[in-house]
Image 1 (cartoon, helix red, strand yellow):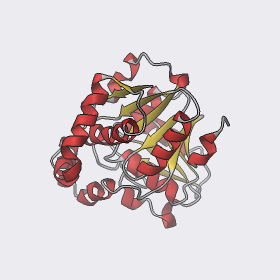
Image 2: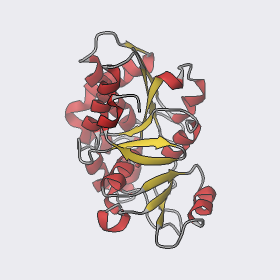
Image 3: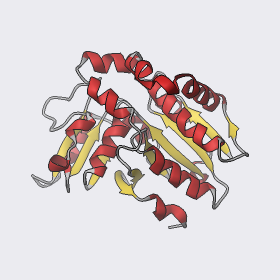
Image 4: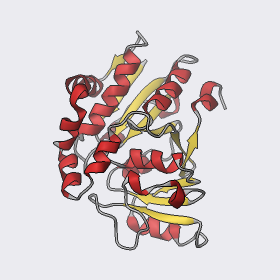
Length: 254
């Protein structure tokens, strides 16, 4: 089994893996993956990821009033006119249940847009760690398949928290399976996770994006994003939307 990691979304065009036979896991710990998990856990109907603010507004205006929310950020800040930003704490059951969410973010939705014609695309973070691991194992136990972790990154650069999170997933996988072949970035992610796993708070608070979020007043989001299994859902991207899927659904070819 090949495990490939892309350190930022700018590397997506250079991947040589066959996406059709690869599970693709998109990671944006601070904060889009964590927020998407929160939204789906609390009953959002679907999430429509958009690369640009303009496209998000266009799609939003096509939905009936009262059925949809416009969500997202640019450089950590909610754009003018949006209903919600990108803080997981905003996406409560009272606000998002049964709603369609139109979302655009600086990094994550950009990564998704580059993968939109591919299969088997899931969103991951610490908040849904065990759920995603169970899904990956159910696929690997039944067929020969490869893995690709796509770190959303930080404005085209490496993101420490995304690298650490991908390393956490890789650590769990290599401890179960013997036939794992890691690319250089996967080994880097694994080593980085091993280095900071006992002090995630210090590492995340002092990462570039962590410092930005703290400056903007979102320290609570960092604390929330470090918690394992807070939102046990598996977001699945298909046909332009992200929906929650139970890992058990993928134990067969459905």
